[in-house]
Length: 119
Image (tube, rainbow, N blue to C red; front, top):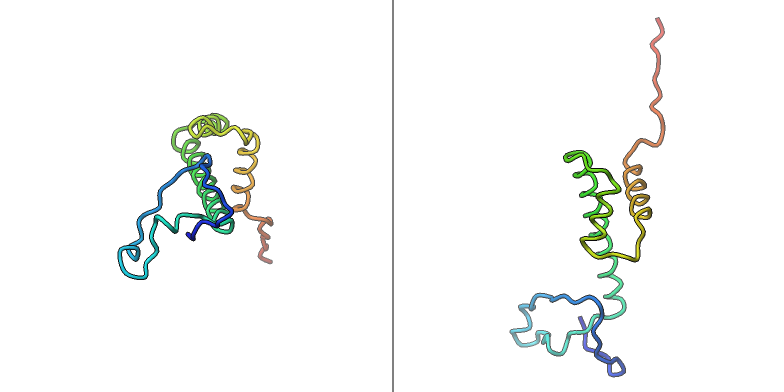
């Protein structure tokens, strides 16, 4: 968090969240939330990266859980996930492909070599 630049207008985006009040703000030398309430471009990129990782983690966990514990198909899980969060910018096929790539990253890359014992 930093002070809002002079040339930057106060705007409201499509995402709003509250950060906890820092304990140092109540003491001398602490940052006041009234003044230090701007998230820089770098801070925005960090938040976006973290929120994206959380979204993918939730989707992957939900897909595994629904398929293996409840027997729900992947396409149905993806459809309910998109509806739950009102996501329209990503297609169902993109989410399915991302899950397949993530799942395949845990599989063995090479076949295991079996050595036969000589008798």
